[in-house]
Image (cartoon, rainbow, N blue to C red):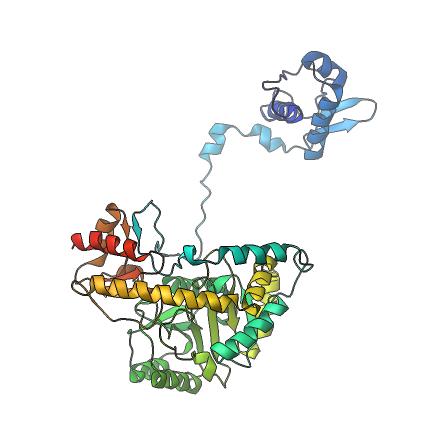
Length: 465
């Protein structure tokens, strides 16, 4: 039986852990070997000056981990069940082994939409201005929700029933969507991924526009889908040719405030798109990410036309309120409700409850729509300031809503993005939406900066032209 070299190096740290760590290290370094008897606790106490109970706790921890075993009335021994190969391996032998490599079965190509450095001016698109939030009202709602009996238990995998009922009424009144199950999700991106996993198998084809939402494209790819491209502002004839020539499972669209170009599909064309998808039995995945931010009455979503149950409607509250609020929703064909429920049970089981309770009460109290009215007024003023500041240097269409402008700079927008970033100004170039191809457009967000910040940021940007 050897004398163990155990010493306390820092009396302010956990003594039990220091002892167990040192004995474990002695076993790992083969200073003491399998089957070897350890000194008694009394001997260790005399050697180290530590309390008997501290040492017993350390040995008990090692017993529970399998390093040490206890034999009644005999003492403590290094366990015999530690793999002998562990002791035979040396650093040199391990280094000779073939490296452990892993390669996923898909490659993600997500652009960086968010700046990583500190900025003077940030024209990132899709960001609401957090300074506009009714902070006191939300604080009261969150405080009240904390005391809810529903908060700490399991809930419906499809979302808090009360919020789903509120959303059913709200969508029928504001977006004319009816007779569709409403599912609450952790934002619209989770909704997109969940529905893609349910709909798509390897080799299925999804139709997308050339310049579109990169997250959606990569979501479909991770599910094994092949991406068929169609021109932005495609004609109905071009769409029908695509649907005829390839077996398309779904088409992904942002008909209102198209991402990234900010344009909207007019009512006749929406109806024609829907009729073609019915004819060729193609699902429509409609991403209506910022419906509430409009400056003229918006067209009703494609989902409001959906008598055949072929439109999967995705949306979120992140753009209207704040990104940290991970509450989105889907309005689904009835045929998919069961599969979404089972998929949710398989993954997270349910959404976080607190924010759902708050969102339900915010809608029911009228606070949500009051906040929207304020945001629309402020964002319209900011859009008009940006339009005024850009009109002499750039080409663009003025959108009827949304949180950004799609601006033609008439030069390589990726190079302009890099020059602007070096000066502390963040803008998003076209290449981040079209698969890395060169382009001349920037998507400039106007929502998260006030009027003076927009003016000063654009002044810097224009100097770089």
